[in-house]
Amino acid sequence: MGKDVMTLCVLAVVALLFITEIIPLAATAMGGAIACGLLGLLPLGQVFSGLSNSTVVLFAGMFVVGASMFYTGLAQKIGKGVVGMFGTSENSLMLGVMLAGASLSGVLSNTGTAACLMPVVLGICAGAKIPASRQLMPLAFAAGLGGTLTMVGTPPNIIANQALATAKLPGFGFFEYAWVGIPLTVVGIIYMMFVGKHLLPKAELSADQEIKQEVDATSHDATKQMISGAILAGVVLTMVLTDIDPKSSLGAFSMRGKITLEMAAFIGAILCVLTKCLTEKQAYASIDWVTILLFAGMMPVSAAMAGTGAGKLIAETVVGWMGTPTPLVLMAVLFALSCGLTQFMSNTASAALLCPIGVSIANQLGADPKAVVMAICIAASCAFATPVGTPPNTLVLGPGGYKFVDYIKAGSGLVLVSFIVCMIVIPVVWPFFP
Image (cartoon, rainbow, N blue to C red):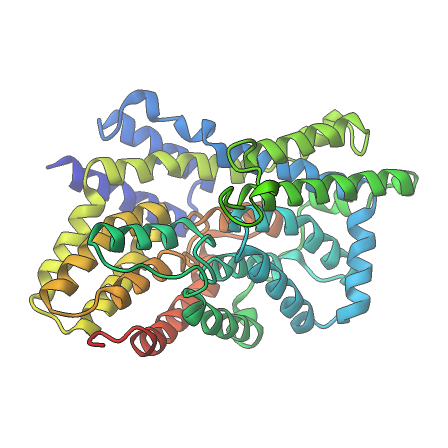
């Protein structure tokens, strides 16, 4: 048995354990990474490499920044204000949360967007007396949808442009993605408000989260609330500036290359402790280790899929089954393949693997590759059906009290809706035979 097939076997077992939750999710993820090392599917030195991944640091930092908003009472204060604006209706709150998440994610990292908004959403849920599980998953989904709005919304969008440039073809404009991104986001929000919400669990917050939301009145210090809010605002602003191209008209404000999202988050966390917005003990307790270990465990498994050629094997097998497809069939199959891979594999890796394949086959058919490439990169952002498909999904897992199957229930329908929207919109905007 080749290493590629062995990797797929490990992934199948991990997927089964995720769905059944016979053992804890974090144990399954870390066990998958260890299995890849023991079977020689990746170097032993990389088995725990996920723990040093910069996104793990981002998670930890933002958990602390978010907790400081609870311990100072700022999150509850913001929550009450938003409740006053949108009312206590679950739908109206979901609309506000998803619009905010999608809008910010269009120009910011979707991970950074979800990390920054999560504490605010938790505060809103506390103020409206709504279980956080009703709003956090929609937030994560909105962050994924918003990434389809611009070229910098998510890495697969940039990879799509690179694939076209490599083939010496004109690429997409900065806002050209919005032709499909806007209808996709609008339909996605409508779906979650009227269909998806019925598939969301009504899990109450964990005891730890309840403690965070019921902070003793003596900690509701106005000065500390201002400091906590200023720290969060500073972190968000820094994240915005790291996404500005130094060569653009706003280049003078760019922080790219000078500071990273992770550094911004951790500096914010340190400041929260130094300014006594929360204690050191509270900061440690605020980190959700299930989220950290789940993400860290799946990173090496994803690396094994890429390194052993398991992802490539899936792609070649599916493409081989197609024979000589029509351009529309090709687009549909590669969308499904990209979307399937990205549920367990990095969306960046999925797009990097499939975009060149899409360009090559489209050229063989004499069709313009733009539609196929756009379908692949959009599908790579539709990682809604698992908590490990994209960092925002993982980030809300613990605070929302979700199980693996909750993502399958609520996210699978959104994947299907996204597929339908793309099959309708993409060929119209980017014709196969212009």
